[in-house]
Image (cartoon, rainbow, N blue to C red; front, side, top):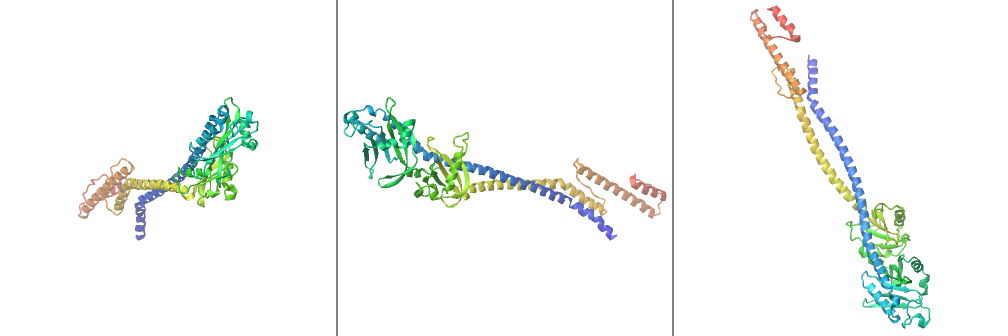
Length: 453
């Protein structure tokens, strides 16, 4: 009997845990889906942010390249304009030619840009001699050149003038300008000026007379040390390092160490930057002008730490094939990604917790009738027939509740009727009448009572 009682209670225990099983399983499924959503969201967000940060780094490099190149572009335009202003030099009085050239060169230096020198080289016998006599008078071959630069005290100008500069005519840039009639940007070189070695480039333009005949060339030298001051003014990266290389690998600019300027890339440990430059120029030009860039992980030569380096082509009016390299520490590059991804993940987790709580409450709410039915069924199992389940829904749970209420009412009425009949029999009142309409498996009980009476 005890064994049967224990067995009878096992289903009740199982039924009482059904809602918890459903809730726990639903919670696990929801949590799994939510965790997968978080991981996918974090992964996709990180990928998108890495792409945005790469483009941001490239944009910062291009902006700095523009700032560095802007002075050179300005000088390029000024030199072309200045060359045009000399077209009438051959029509001036020969005695005024040299003074006019000197005045024009000084004006070019004072036009802004911090040029250390301005110069003009003329074709043989195109300019009068130092006495102001043209070739027809002195009958000597003259190769005139004029170079102007500020004096050491910066209070005036030093003029260097030579009439025997025939070697200019055999220099590559001079022959190329004379042949093509186009401006020329000379490769960077080291020039000694007032006892100092300065890394320079020269921007040179042809000079033509009013009839279009080639008269010579004129231009300015630009000290690349001035370009250092333009670097890193338009980037929010604290660990940024900028370097620029010439086509032959010469270091043009280094924002961290000016001593490297003018040295070959291989001598200062910039071999990787030089290889990056070759690769970026091998890339096809995209739809937009500033669409070529190469980003590689490696060493930030400015800080000596692991970093991300972007390499972009750096050209001046299409005349140069230089490269600009901008590097930032990996920690700074990825920190913004980690921070943004962390914020996004936190928001997703917060929404997920709210969602889990809401789902849990909804499950509990919909499973609450099952718990009520289970408790009432347990009372019925214990012999309590006076139960009433107050669930009025029209779904299956509502129908089940009404069925339990009906069963309880029927059983209660049967027990009451049988008790009354048995009580009368016990008092020897055998004249009894069944008042209930027994149904189903209860009909034999009704028939047995009627036989006894």
